[in-house]
Picture 1 (cartoon, helix red, strand yellow):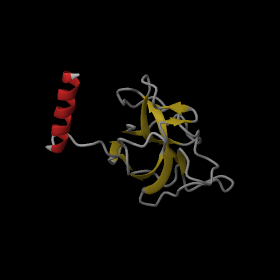
Picture 2 (tube, rainbow, N blue to C red):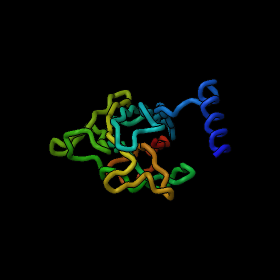
Picture 3 (tube, rainbow, N blue to C red):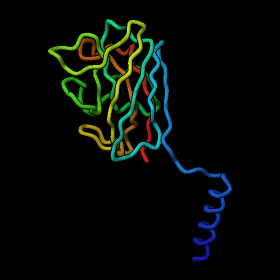
Picture 4 (cartoon, helix red, strand yellow):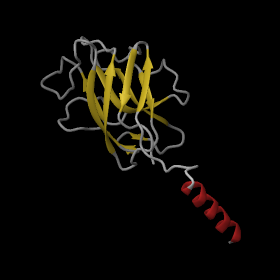
Amino acid sequence: MIRRTVLTVAAATALAAGLVTPAHAAPGSASNLGKTLNASNATSLAAAGETITVTGSGYSASQGYYVALCAVPSDYSYGTKPSPCAGGDGQGGTTVGPSAWVTNSPLGGSASYPIATNGTFTAQIRIAEINSGLDCSDPDLTCAIVSRRDHFAPNDRTADVYIPVSFS
């Protein structure tokens, strides 16, 4: 009991002294092969879910991409397709979901976010720690907000960019 009290007092003193700060969400950014991806929040995300604004630069306006929360290699190495991803392939929905299709050539009026001629885009995704098809609370999985080529080039790894995420 005395040990617990001492540890509690020590933790409260460190917090009050500014030596420890409470966790809060922070933006994230990553680049690979000339493409840069930015996320409005990437750390201490709400486990129940929150909407993230994702921007990209260096992308081709003539190609399509998915932006999603996906499982990635634990060392964040590139070369294998990020999978599984929450929300599938990002096509079809009309609301903000766990994945988004970024393209200037949507099929059949599918919801998508456009890419400017200078290679930039802004999209939104809504992600949670546990999503349909992806459980980021699993200690054996490493999750990240990713960009990757869409269904027209599923084996093309040149658009893969990973922003590590953490949930509170």
